[in-house]
Length: 72
Image (cartoon, rainbow, N blue to C red; front, side):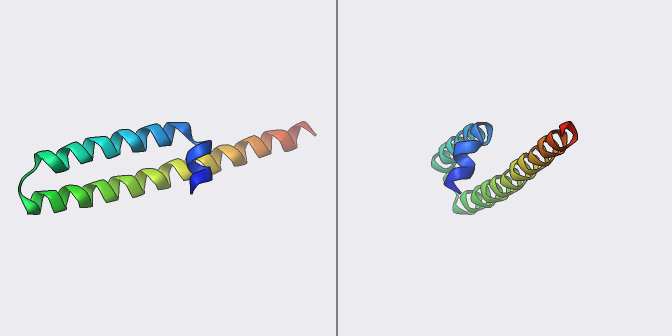
């Protein structure tokens, strides 16, 4: 997991910004139900974005590998 964050700077920046936004929302929102819902949204968005970025990284790696294979 740490290697993923080191290799993908864009995702790390996105995830930090997302965390800060939801942390601020968590302190602003006083209602427990809305706090819980915001946490669920944060979890879903974080998970989906992780899957998106890791899939994009895998696709880029495969494309680069294909290009290198064609040069040989």
